[in-house]
Length: 160
Image (cartoon, rainbow, N blue to C red; front, top):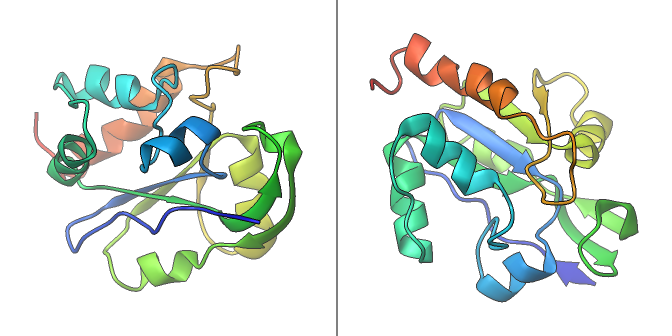
């Protein structure tokens, strides 16, 4: 069994982005989206026009600056490699632990596996399915991410 990361959030987090489970490279790096080929931090950097940084503390500072929380929908599982379709025997993460302790206003699901597991355990919660930022996803869509992140500006959560 592999165990994922603890949730990353604080009292100012307004958007919760949920992935499925950390990839091998993320687990090796010790933080979310640690595969340099993953488009996640590149997408945020492009949208906000700001540099993320390379190390974990710089990534955390960037996320705090834009009031973004990160977690995965799967806390623990069996997995071979990094592909979502190789996940078995999973235990869901306690998403409510984040929702009870941060004023989250929007939940974005990074990919179909994250979305389907979230729907399985949290069918009543509003959320938005986003195109996976994984390098394996040929249908990645920056514009969809930009439209949903625009929420931070529309709600004056973050001002450009």
